Structures are given as structure tokens and as C-alpha cells.
Amino acid sequence: MKKLRVMMLVHYTLVPPEDLKTKDDPRMEKYRTEYDVKTALLALGHEVQVVGVYDDLGPIRKTVDEWKPHIAFNLLEDFAGISAFDYYVVSFLETMRLPYTGCNPRGLLLARDKALSKKLLSFHRIDIPAFMEFPLGGKTRRVRKLRFPVIVKSLMEEGSVGIARASVVENEAELLERVAMIHERTQGDAIAEEYIEGRELYVTVLGNHKLDILPIRELVFGEVPNAEPKVATYRVKWNEDYRKRWGIEYQFSRHLPNGMEEKIARLCKRIYRILDMTGYARLDLRLTPQNELYVLEANPNPGIARDEDCTLSAIKAGMSYEDFIRRLLTFGLSRRSSVAAD
Image (cartoon, rainbow, N blue to C red; front, side, top):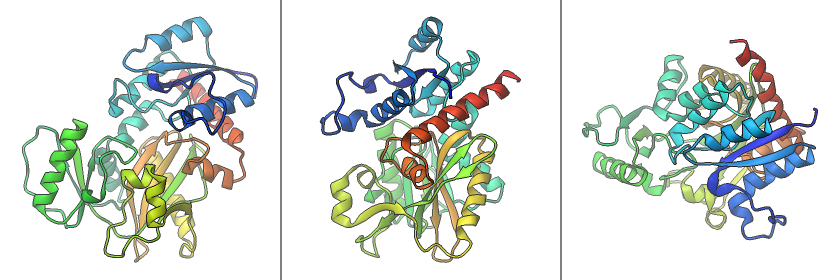
């Protein structure tokens, strides 16, 4: 790959300080993804300019006009503080005919909305948990079609925001109370879906047209009592001490039933294409004791720090971290020809 000018797009609070160099720097936790990606891009020989973005597209246009980058490496997860609006930025890049890494605007729009994505997958006869939507400010409805226990989440937020052990509810009163909490905390819509007992699997998909399925990761709830629901709460995802206390571990899946890996690969490729995703994504599945697969979520542009599940799966597949970042650049550059031809 030739030397590129890469414009890294990050949240304005996540522009890594120039003097951030060592892993034991206490600031590293905050900037680890941005630091890791920037370091990898520099190691690959590219020029890098980091652009912080909040609610103004001006800095992007200014950088494009003055520096003329070859590609944008998109690490944004929201626009104007709203995760549902991240596709605005990518749409802007499309209008400028500037290649970018990760998912296209339509894929972001379809996959980010948990209810919309579930409706599409259900139409294509892919198993999903039964669910109901609870719009912010909407009239409270009777819960008739859901079987308890039920888990309540934000409709649009990622990273397990708002998910706790109390998110799994046993009756309608608890459900409505939790919905109200999600409304208040996120100022957005809520979704409630039937809790599916089983193994939690994370599958990374790479590519635009030709797709690769990377080694499957699993969240193992080692010492969580059998009577407790096994849920990837915010504390599970972000608190290492909490995981250690309960023996919860992210690892590569083991002892899957015969033929299950191939079945998962076929299913994930279907999901990726139905939701029109490009670049890379992580799909969250549940495998029941009866060996049934349920789709929980589709996550375009998931975390790609050196210690994230997607990265670890890429390394398990034989890539270095720099190889992984190079592939994401390649997917972004190769997609430009099809955009320009539209």
C-alpha cells in the first residue's frame, strides 16, 4: 500500500495528546483506541492528521480542502452527542467523494436502531428475541406479547449503556419502571426484549462484498449463580475488577457443537448483507441449550483498540494489529470506486 494522508475522525474530547507515549500513562485508558489506531497508521508509514468533531462538519471540510487526505479513518460513535446521528458524518464524506473506513450511512442507520434491524431480520426469517418499543414521551402500552423475564435497553445507545442486572425484569411493573429509567437517563427511546438463556457469542465480519468471518469470541459467566441472568451489563463490559470478582471472562469460544461454526458463519454473512453493512462489524448472538441461534444486536464500527474482541479475533486469524488496520483502510479505499460509479 502506498503512503497515504489519513484524516482520523474522533470525538473532540478524544484527540490523543501528543505527549502520550507509554502504556502506564494514566491517560491511556481514555484515549486507547485513538492512540492505538494512530500509532498503527504511523507504523504503516502513513501521514496522520487527527480531527476532533462534535456538532460541526466545518473542521472536516477545512481539513479536506487544505490537506487533501486520501481517506478518513472514522472512529466517531455519535454526532452532536447523539449516537443515532453518526451516519450524518459518513453521509457528508460520501458527498465529498472521500473514502472512509467502516460502515456506509445506510448500514449505520439500519443497524444502530435495534428495533428496525430486528424487524428486517425477522422479515428474512432470522430468529430474534420477541420485543416491544417504548418511545420517549409515548403513551405507555400494555405488555401482552412478551414472556418474562425481559431485558430493557436503550434503543440506540451502544457499549451496554444503561444495562445493569436490574435491566432483566420479571413483571410488567418492573418493566415500566426500567423503561422510565432508560428514558430519563438517555433521553431516548427504549426497547424491551425477551431474555434468551444461552451462550453469548461475538462474531466479527470483515469486508464489503467478499466477507470474512473471524474466530468467534464468547463472554463466559464463570461464577455467576445459575439462577442469575447472564447479561453483558455496563459493569461487565467496562469494569475489569467486577469481571474478576464474578469469574466473567472474554475468550475464544470452545466446544461448539459440530457444524455450528459453519452455521454461524453463514448466518452472520446473511445478517451483514441484509443490514447493508460494509467495512467491519461485530454481531452478538445467543446460542441456546437447544442449539438455536438468536441475533441480539448488530454493531457496525465496533471497538478496535488492541485489546478489543474484534482485534483479538483478527490476531487469532493470523493478522498483526497493523495488518488489521491496513485491511480496514483497504476496504474503505476499494469501496470508493463503487460510490463514484453511482
